[in-house]
Structures are given as structure tokens and as C-alpha cells.
Length: 540
Image 1 (cartoon, rainbow, N blue to C red):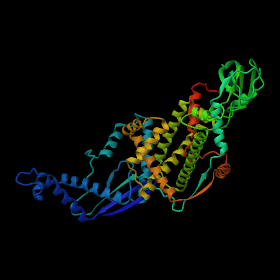
Image 2: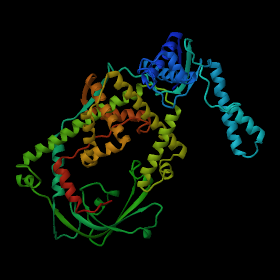
Image 3: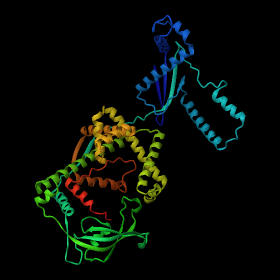
């Protein structure tokens, strides 16, 4: 068997298979043997039926068809396997040799013109006369309207066939053998621990009455607050009652600081501009005023730093034990951020170093799904894609192009990771997938059993978990073989800020691969804030 593979561009290939006479004869021999093995012919045991008797029970065309189907299936599968080709679309077999490149180009142009003519005919229905319709039918079906092509396979003679299809892309991968990575390391300082302790004191402060008339730093203020945008009238906005703790956190317009020195009944106003990276796209860069009418205020008494205070926060015997626990958790979070950054570096290196020619239908389909997903997410936020594009200063066409670029990056990374996994011999097992499901359960706050059931009934989700497990295992292998340099986190952050500034506006390019940063609060702080949140309303 001879196999010739012709690459046509856009991941399209033509596979041409040529078989000599002996291979064809062997294929017919196997067909006769299978028919003999079936048995059922009176006077002969299964497997002992002579060819002459088989010919009496089966017509020649039937034997030829059986041989043809078996031969195509066997030889084509071997050809695709040997050349590591995986068809994306349905394969159609043509007998004989494929047309030369010039003829193939002519056929492509002719097909395009035919589609254009069909489209024109569809726009003007009813204009084609009966004679044209009959001619078309005869052209499509032939005089006898026989859709089955005549099989050219003849026992003892050479035979060839070919097929043209879109294959899964085969990327050119980067050389990761001498990969250099930089791990940003950070040691938790006493000041960082003290900051967390102070947050715990603020959260657990007790409200106390004061004899003074004016508000001071650290007081808790109850006020009717309204936020008025630049294009709104003050009277159109209804106020909400809010609790504001002076100096505890950052408020819009630093309104808490503006309240210092004022008394109940005063109305305090501050102007501000929403940040350009505000989560609500519609508010980015907008000017606004925050107006607070003071209702009342009280002092706050912070708990003393004693062992009793530590014991009140959980399973801690002393203040020093609490400090030690906070330090360990902060260090674990910092270490995890460093590892996440290493993983992000590997992904970026793979993405930037991979070259792959993606089928256009792949990219367009992925881009459409990405745009639809964005629309669903925006709808949950009460926005439309048009609102989102306008807030970002983009046209709908530019927004779609951004999503297309992201889809292109996602597809490139997908095929690169798949090829790298095969190249490095990475295999995943049930333990890897279970570990990934556990991560999903932890991230979502759900139950592991529920996530496992979801993977059983949702094939797409199960495939996503397998891909995540493969990616995690592959990246770990790459990092293990890389040259990793530890650098101070502050130095690394400054380098990244400089690189982003050099790129332009410091924002990620469409399609850039980034891993979510792991942010973990110490348990004591998280539990205390959750408890406090149950008693507080959200403050602007």
C-alpha cells in the first residue's frame, strides 16, 4: 500500500491510497472466506464452502461491494493512523487518483460559482422553467437516476482511492527543554500579620455611647446616603440608610473622612470619579456625588490584644498562637500565588511559541460561542453587549473581533496542550479527574458527590475536567524540568508593571492567557468578616 498525503491549507488534506493487484486479490480472498464462514449453505460446513459455490449464492456486485467496504475501512484507517490524521468532518471516498493541484483549484472555483448561482436562484424563485429543472435532475442523477457510483474494484487488478477532508490541526510546538522561569517569592512580614490582627480588632469592636457632639476617627455613623450620577437629578435618587465606620475601609469619595467634625442633622457631600476599571462597565470614568445626611453616631471600643481575645476567635489558646496561624496562612497564600504565576508563565510560553493553522470554521464557531457566553454573563449583570461595547469605547464589530481573538488563543492552547501531552506521554487516570472535581467543589462551595454526578450526565463538563487534569499534570511536568529562578515578589511585580506599560495601556491583549490569582484570607479573618457581614448592610 502506498499513501500520499497532500496538504491543501486550512487543515484540509487529501489522502491518496494506492493498492497493488496482490493486495486487491487478498481482499477478495478474505471476503470469500468470511462468506464461507457464515455457513448456512446446505451440504457444506461453515468455512468449507468452495468459491464456486459461494458465487452461486452471492452475486458478483454484492461480493465486490462487501470487499470494497472492508478494503476502504481497513486501508484508510491504517493510512490515517500512520500519518496521525484525525478527520473533523464526514469522510467521502472517491475512486481513482485525485486531480492535480491545478484541477483541484479549478474545482474549488467552480464549486464557489455554483454556490453563488444557487444563492441567486434562491433569491428569485419560480423563474426557472420546467426544462431547466429536468436538465438539472438528469445532471444530478443521470439518465437512470442511480445515486450509487459504479465500483471500479476488480479482483486481481490495482485499485486506488482518495478522500479530502478537514483534519484536526497539528501544531508546531515550542522547545521547552531549556525553559527558564521566574518564581516571585515573598516572606510574610510582622507588619502584614499586625494588619490582619488589626482587622480582627476592627471587626470585633463594641459600639459604645460617647458624650461629645462631633464625629471623630473610628466612630460608627448611621446616615441616609444617596449616590447621584453626573446625568441624574438629586431628587430622582432615593436615599438608603447605611452604617459607615470612619477609617475602616475605602468609601466612595472618602465620604467617611468628610464626616469627621460634623454632627447629626448635617448634610455632607463629596464629589468623585469612578475608576476606569470599575466592575460595572457602565460606571467607568463617570463623575458622581455622594450625599450623606447624618442620623446618629457612636464610638467603637476595640478589644485588647490578649489571649482571651484570641480564644474568642476560635480554637486558639493564646495570642501568639493566633499570630502564628495567621502567618502560616498568609505564607501559604503567597506560595500558592507564586506557583500560579509559574503556571501562567508556562501557559504564556506555550501559547506564544505554538504555531498552528486552524480551520476557519473552528475559529468562527468558537468566536460565536464566546460572544454568546459574554452576552449571557452581561445579561445577568443587567447589561447588553451593546452597553458593554459602548462603555468600553468599542463598536460591536470590535467587540466581536476581541472575542474572536480570545477564541483563537483558546483553540491554539487547546491543540498545543493536547499535542504536548502526547509528546511527553502524559496520561491521566481516575485519581487525576477526581482531584479536579474536588477542586471544582471547593471553588464553588458545592458537594463533591453533586459535582461527580454532573460529570456523569454532562459529557461537555466531563471533557472539561479531563482537559483541566491533563493541563495541570502537563504544566507540573514542564515546571519540574525547567530552570526556575526565585526572585523577590516586589522586584517581579515591578518588572511586570514595566512590561505592561511598555505594551501600551497595561491591559492584557485579547486572547492572552492568564490564570486567576489565588487570594486567601486567614481563617480567623474570614470567619469574623462573614459574621460581621450578616449584621451589616452593604455600604457604597
